Length: 464
Ligand SMILES: Cc1cc2nc3c(=O)[nH]c(=O)nc-3n(C[C@H](O)[C@H](O)[C@H](O)COP(=O)(O)OP(=O)(O)OC[C@H]3O[C@@H](n4cnc5c(N)ncnc54)[C@H](O)[C@@H]3O)c2cc1C
Image (cartoon, rainbow, N blue to C red; front, side, top):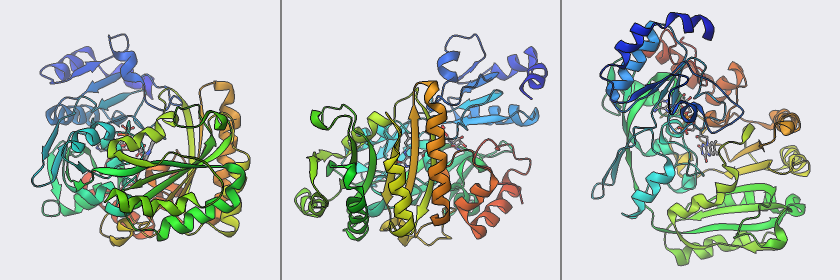
């Protein structure tokens, strides 16, 4: 397909397209092309014929028209962290990374953010005002992709998903129109954009409500992975019943040689319970305390910290240039056979970089009705994932085999999946990410807003 399309894009077409762009157009051989070609997950190496580095909504409109009129496969990229490699293509990429404006209204707690910002950048700027918008666990993830899939992070139990703080978007739909979508304007489109991924257009501006988040109790409590059978279920019980100020994410991995991890622990399989407790720090210390009593603590590095510091916890596993593969599912509980599957994953953890991740959900996320947005699985308790990470291509087969086995074993206990944690796992899994009713509604809206499926390089919803 790419070869045929290479012939169809004529020089004159390109010159016309390039004229008057606010951003730039890159082709193989151009300066900057090699850097612009790359995405976070090195398992997906693509060489696009065209990369539009869009600097404005106007550029995006022109890019969409160019791709649509020539029926080009088009990838949309904000932060480039798609776990399925969907933000690159051998044909055309619309790269929004130059769109990095941020307007903060500290009085009204309203924030307008460009899609190309990372959540780490947004959090640092907002922290100046004692504010935060819920995002994910990693600072380098982009505003664009995380938001349109839902957004599950360090504030999920207190302030919900990222989309629960979304007030409006400006979005270029497949017909090339720039539309505003909010509760009042195009509410059906606004519903779909909150969880429907990149299926409905390209968001050029996000408007969020920010929340008062200043100093948190952050950091991690570390146990030996040999205590997983007791520590993990005890963590799950407490993490779900604790005050909503506390959100936690567990990583079971080979302890990396980081300064905050005691040297004697480096290289051992450990359980890292990452914590983020908002509100009064003194009260927060009390809320976190039971997490120190789940077994024999190897290290406790929790304490008062500015909210953006919470991203330091994941820096060692979010390294650009690594290959990665993921399988994940929601679970209703961490008990019985589901627990046994997780424990098997932990016991067979591939060295040096595989990890099992568990997130405790509930709280504000669960209070939003399942049909209020296109994110249906509001009432799930646990999100479990196995993530293979490798730099050396010879590790690919063993890492992938471990991840796939974990995914297969977890399926009988799974209760849906999070769209942003899906690899390319086929249309059935995309349907599982939404559930029947939400998928049906999304499919109808896809027919309205993108009947020709211009935006198909994503967790694709078929026009109904
Ligand atoms: C290291 C790492 C940590 C992660 N942690 C979390 C986490 O804690 N919580 C969580 O919820 N998710 C997490 N994710 C998943 C992440 O949310 C998704 O991969 C998300 O798509 C990444 O957003 P991005 O803008 O960086 O990605 P991109 O690769 O740029 O985009 C991914 C897809 O999103 C769509 N998209 C991107 N920008 C736009 C836009 N402006 N308008 C419309 N559609 C768009 C496109 O379909 C695109 O293919 C993590 C991923 C990684 C790699």
